[in-house]
Length: 191
Image (cartoon, rainbow, N blue to C red; front, side, top):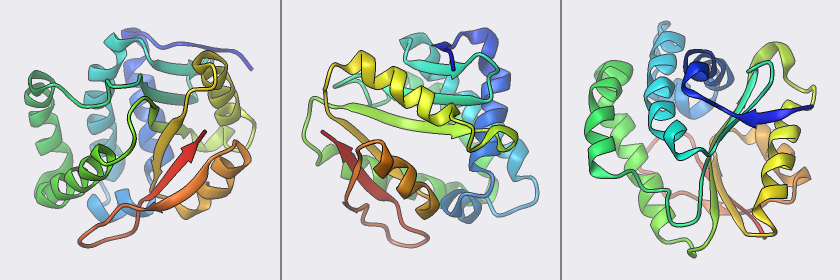
């Protein structure tokens, strides 16, 4: 399966793909529990992709049914101007659950700060429901691992059903993100 660098032209389709991929995720259903979740997630992932695309580390399959958002070593933190640009989208996406979303994002960021430096960070990977289980996610990871030349990779998984997928690709659970409430996030490393 072919993988390519995503472009700004792909943004609407990839935002919808990630919204579909995370629509039933335990953490995202806890953060955005209303029936308008898909629209809110599409808006949120659109904002996140808008920041990530210029860095050149977003990959997609040719059919745009799967997407992976990466940060190169030392580049995972959002610069303040990017946070300011994303703020209106976060507010509209989360609605009344904004404090819950911000608290969870802060917990994830604090935990990430404690991880050893020099790693690639898998911010998000998602596959649209119609093609799930057909090798799209495996293709995205394989393409990335080929580029990373053995460098360590870190991710947080918010869905226990995805842990076996990551384990098949060499990741190990190293702990859970300390959270004040809601479903867990697992920290995973591939060395």
